[in-house]
Length: 262
Image 1 (cartoon, rainbow, N blue to C red):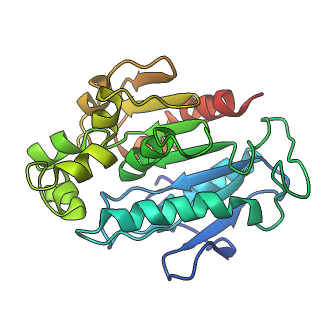
Image 2 (image 1 turned 180 degrees about the vertical axis):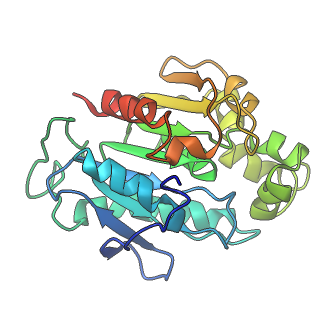
């Protein structure tokens, strides 16, 4: 039995970054560890919350990271609710209990580097969360931060075309690219990269070549970018990248350590 098949374990201490019921996060790890935001997947569906990502969060905490396991709104037809929540989380990170960020009362240091000015040492996202952290990396008006995207739904238009996740993407967006071209243009990492957007900090994308939920082509077809590095993990399935018991988990840790080292 793997960590993801077992009980997800105890809930981490709750921290609210906004007034809404989904504007909440669980905290794991040492107070003085470098801050890592974890954005869970679930194809943007309201029925899939952060619960399944707790083993991932605890495993990162065991590496010395201060982990913020984020919840966010997943409202069909209202993708901007999701984006607004993650922007609110970004703005609130300086207030994470026990964590002092540069520009506030103190300065976080550890063996894995330091948090950036008013933000995290890294954002990590899986599946739909991988698309959201890529969007974070490509948002020019936010402070640059390293990003680790795990099996991301990196091409929303292809996800719509191929009916991935039983039409999860058009359900979240509100319709197809033909119906909502502006939404896809703003929210689709593939479209943003094609239009010339560049990440302000290093981005690593990891994807298993045996992923049957989010095809690896969504990663291999990403446009080249000087700060974006994609690596295909031979033999890895979709959930292997968030399963601490998976043989591919060390590759995930190695990339996160590399991104957060000074």
